[in-house]
Structures are given as structure tokens and as C-alpha cells.
Image 1: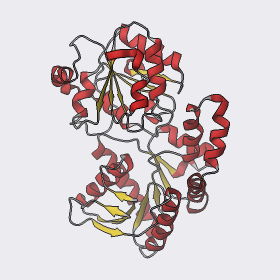
Image 2: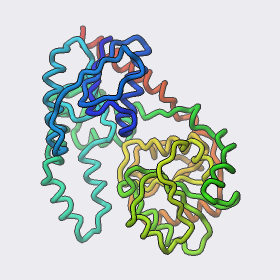
Image 3: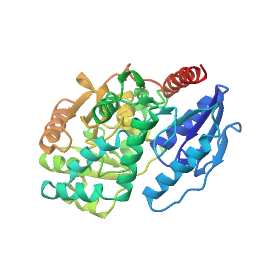
Image 4: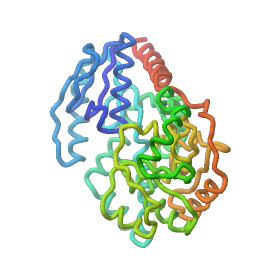
Amino acid sequence: MNISIAIEKFDPHVGGAERYCWDLAHFLAQRGHDVEIICMRAKAPKIESIRIAPVRALNFPQGLRHLSFAIIHALRARNLPGSIHFGMGNTFLMDIYQPHGGVHRAWFSRETQRYWKPVRSLMRLLKRLSFKDVVQRIMEWWIFKITKPRVIAISDMVADDIQNFFHYPQEMIDLIPNGIDLDKFCPENDVFRDEIRQRYGIGPDEFVFLFVAQNPRLKGYETLIDACIELGDIPFKILIVGPSNEPMRRKTDSLGDRVIFAGNVSDIQKIYPSCDCLVHPTYYDACSLVVLESLASGTPVITTRSNGASMFVKGDMGHVLPAGDVHALSSAMRNMISSPKRIIGSDILKSHLKVFADVEEVMLRTDKIKKS
């Protein structure tokens, strides 16, 4: 099967969508498929048979970059009629669409909930008038109303959003949630618990919350810190993994040494089981990998209904709350501290290789229909 994958940056270190494309391309190439990547820039693939087809699009502003890449990609992809075209956004032409970041309109509605209520309407108006937002809305409308590809939804939430916003036929949507490396993320990593706690100056019996985010504001950092303040004198620590800045640090002044900023780390698989609960109070996540990784590691989770991965948080696995609700979050955190628990790695989680095999099956079916 000839497969063409569209992604602006083919580099696993850029972000979640880029990592997904990188791993999927290598999986498909190993399975013997002919894989071409249409992109603006790329890291050299580990498999030589993966071909890079670079295109030159405008870099700035971001909205114009997305639009120019989509147009140039469409012109190139039309010359590959025998290929299955796989896209994750910022493209007009594809046979299979996997909106890895979710539905833009749903993201917009939920992400803007983080603004102070008196200025929320103004912020929404300003964002709606931005060129980037206009481009993304047009692209999304074009995909679901004109292109009408087969869709792979990575969570029930994303599938519901697609149907609610675009009335897309349910039979055109395949539900294939994100997968993770179940050998890398596993409860057995708790053997590193003492090592990790010593690294960050945490006592062996202290209750530790974990927050992991590259975009802390979107993932609910301020809600989290407000909830921590509301906990008062209850003893706990919170380990913040990811980038931080001075305003973020100032917000934690009243919490003293209970907040530990770890920065970016290279061994996150050791950190999950070394903590007692992951807190991910996100305003929007299509299907958060950190939640899946934490559950697979045996660490319970507190997250929100605006996270597609909440579909996996059931029973003793944790709590699912409304986004932005400080009181509900502090109550859930208090409950976790008073009743600490470990969970058995969820058997409903799939390995990333099984997920890619499911995606391959969708591609094979689509290829058969296309050639019939």
C-alpha cells in the first residue's frame, strides 16, 4: 500500500501529533508499506525507505503557514492518486483524517473558559477575529463539509464533538484511542521510587501530587495551585514537570517548599509510580497521554470532563471533574490524601503498536474501497 502522510514538522521532539506521525510512519514502513512524508521540515527517519517530500510554505504568521502548507500539500497530493492520504490537520485533501488535537471549535469553547468571566466574552471575540482562528475554522469546515474523509477519533469526546458540531455520519468515524508503550510505562517502575524521591528531596512517606504539562495554562495550572492553597495546612507535596516561568513560581509563594519545579525530564516513566496521584485539570485535551501513562504506571488520576482520556478513569482509578472548578479539585485532592491507593495498570489501555495496527486496518479498508 502506498501511504502519504501530511505533517508540517516530521520530528518526534516537536509535539504529540509529530511523535504520533513519526511512530506511525516507522510502524507502517516496517510492515512493508511504501511511506512518503509531505512536510515543511523533517528529522532524518530511522528507516531509509521512508521518503521525505519537503515543501516550501510561508513560515509567518502561523495562520498563513497553515494555509499555505494546506494548499501546497493539496497540489502535490493530487499527483499521487494511488496513495492513501493521511492527515492530522492543516490540510484540505486526505482520505483519512485523525484530528489529533481534537475539534477546533470544541477547543475554542472550552479553552476560553479559563479567562476571568468579566472579560471572557471580549477575549473570545478577539480570538475569533484573529487570522489564525479564521483559517483553522475554514479548514475544519472544509474537511467535514467538502473533503468528507474517513475519520479516526482518538476519544469518545472527540467523536461526540465531531458529530455535535458538524453532524458528521457516525458510520464515517472509527474510534481508535491513543496507545502507549506498556513496557515502558508500568507499575514495576516503582522500584525507582526511592531514587526519584531522593532526587527531589521528598520523604518516603510524603503524599505527592504530580502535574505534567508543556502548556501549563491550558492544562489548568492556575486552577491546580488555587486548589492547593485551598487545602490549607494539610501536608502534601506537588511535583511540577515541564517548563515554568517567574509568574508561575510567584503564584506558589504561599505554599512554600510544598511545590517542586522539576523542569523537563528524560525519565518520566520513573516519576509516575514515584508519586501518589497525577493531577491534570485541563481545559481541553483530545486524549491526554499523561493520563494514560499514569494509569498504566499504577498511579491514580484526577482530571476533567474536557479531557478525552477521562473515558479511561473509572472507579478507584481517580476522579473526573468539571474544568476550572477549584473547590471540586481541592475536594478530590483531599480525598486522595486521606485514602491513598495504588491501582493495577488498566487492562483497557492499548499498546501503541496495537493502535497503529488498528490504524493500518482502517487504511487497508479505505484503500480497498478507493480502488474498487
